[in-house]
Image (cartoon, rainbow, N blue to C red; front, side, top):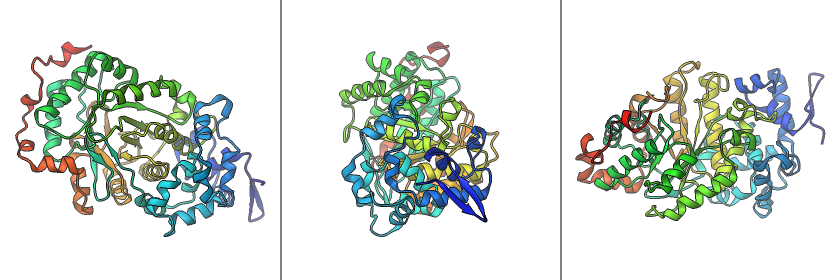
Length: 458
């Protein structure tokens, strides 16, 4: 099938499926930086018209990144479920979009379809969908995970309590944890980005969270978002590891730049499961992604950033993770220039992740040099709430003083729960109703003998 379309006597031709997907993408600065975006709105329309008529099964025969040189491509192709795909195998991309919006595509049906959908199919159909389509279809899909709390149930919205500190000071972190718990945050995870990526710091912070959790019987899980090898060493030394974290991407070369591959992720997943620390489930992995990471690493293979982002979700779903979230505006305006692009990307990521069977959350965020503001984040936050996002971030004042970016606050989660009638995870909600949730003090959270951060690490 030729990849071309004529508009007003002008023939627009596309060299490959990869080129077609890039030209069909909504405008974003990262694809423009890579030199692969449509050169005009008319060319973008032509690409979408061609894409709409493209048979879905073409994605099974033409790889965006070569099979021989990329383990993510091999994962996608080798694990594809032909039986699940059979229900949509006769569709074009446009027909797939129409069907996803139909009453026949219920949440139960979409759950059964998941193993048959490749990331490239998900990305392709999303490029034909306006914002309301992305919201409407994602809202149908519920992906529920469990460790000590149940995240993703209908009518629920969870939060990651993110008490980062620029010097990893346990006292400052404890103060943020108390603040977050008092405002109903932390049922997805209490997750700290450490300023220092070393085993001593990671172990100290894990023990701080675990001490608080046990002292006050808090039904939640902990995570310190150091590199996965640092977490594994802390685990080997006896630190109380709940969820194992890693940033991942959609190409082997990008993951290599992160210092990971599938074999390492397999090892970490197995080690965490063997601890059996979950009380109601064994979803033990936490992944973060973000459009633009492959381009930033010089490992995008000429693919557009949204399609490569969807490929990262194939890596994530291999491990049945507890949590996955796109850190949508964190990489910067070189990749998502303004609020409009960030909002669109957040909805795309949430939709594609849910369609691929992942428990999607979102760090609704932007950097201070992007053309965005908190009103843009409120818009994306509200749209994701309507779309059924599993969880968002809870950052003191929405201003992360360690990572230096703007996210969502404890109060933003309360707003979303209030206006949409959403509640925390059931186990955490029951704990909030009990008396111990109102007796927490900062000093009581610190394990005995906790050393000031300046003496823990340099």
